[in-house]
Image (tube, rainbow, N blue to C red; front, side, top):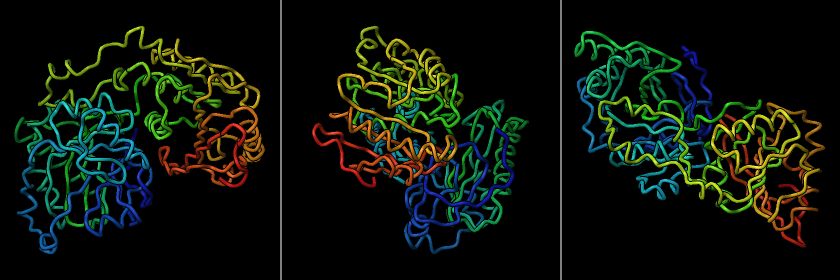
Amino acid sequence: MADRPILRVRARPASNDTDGTSKRSAGASKAAFPRRAAAAARAAPVRGKAPPPPVVAQPAREREAAPSAQAAAKPAPLPGPLFFAACPGGLEDALAAEFAELGITATAQASGGVHFQGDWSDCYRANLHSRIASRILWRVGRARYRGEEDVFKAALALDWPAWFSVDLTIRVQVTAVRSPLRSLEFVTLRIKDAVCDRFRAAAGRRPYVDTSRPGMRIHAFLTADEVLFYLDTSGEALFKRGWRKHAVEAPLRENLAAGILRLAGWTPGTTLFDPMCGSGTFLVEAAQIAAGIPPGAGRGFAFQHLRAFQQELWESLRAPAPSPGSLASCGVIVGADSDPAAVAMARDNCIEAGVAAQVQLLHGAFVDIDPPVPPGLLVTNPPYGVRVGDREALAAAYPAWGDRLKQRYAGWRACFLSADMDLARHIGLKAQRRVPLYNGALACRLFEYFMVAGRPGASGAP
């Protein structure tokens, strides 16, 4: 993806990460990382970017003292590997719970992710096994600053050649919350200059810049008076599992789908039905969860290019291929779509993900297909008139979906992800729960309905 030299200032709550170069918050209700005193609590990251890494609050007396250029050039020593796991906004609790199951202890939770301290095995396992995280960032330095020159000196003081080879291409991404600096583009260039100067001094040459597919991503996060530096251990965003051969016009990101399954309480063996499956994201995630296939099993990671990479440790942590028995115990997983092209795409993706035999695919409209048995979880990401679908047609479709649920889905739980609150009201059911989420930059709500036998659901706004 091409680098954007100057980005617009647009504040929003935390969302999935993308590959921008620099961004700044205009000030909003939430910061994208742990709240750093009152300033971070009033700020928010910019639309469409990766949430900034966590910021550790400083004592008030330290904040009051203006940092000197010399102090900025000497980043504070770190006690050990510190990491931040970014995730889609609204899934922070789910990510912390997933980490607990992986044996990774989240030291703090933030808007847009969690941060943790551990050894390299924790970093490797988080990248390999986390279905909800977007990126795992390793913090390598921090310093106080007042101007661009302080940031440059802080970056220059870090031993970049000790962490990765000059042969790797680089990309620098800067994010900010209430930073006094006027041009994040200029700060980005100064950090790049510092990294290249450090390599030139150590190796006699500098790394090249690649803004689309860099070998190493360098992240810097600016608060009002502090800069934190990170190396991205993931490389490509973690929702890129490596199995998606095709995508519909408005695809659901894989880590959001996995987070929704966790929020809905779905467990392997429970019937899962997606009546508007598109390219099959919910189906593949559920089948791989049931089969024990790690989400990162089919891809590589940036930590494999770090000088500290431990090949033997990595090989010991990589999970073996699932046994035929585990694949056979996935339970009933069914997807359907009225578009035959979408069904074909979902089938190809299931084949690529290794779960084609565990997923049943049907061609037909939701209102025409009988529900699978036994009852379980219906979960879907229907068209909602923002990027696909005709709004008037959808306004007529939602009541028909609600009627179908009332008539044929007693004993089911139904979850609809929608970005249009007005369309969601047309379904004619009262939601037991509404969870704010983000599909990329798109603000959504997850509506959950309990279809109780004899009481199919009260009519009214969700």
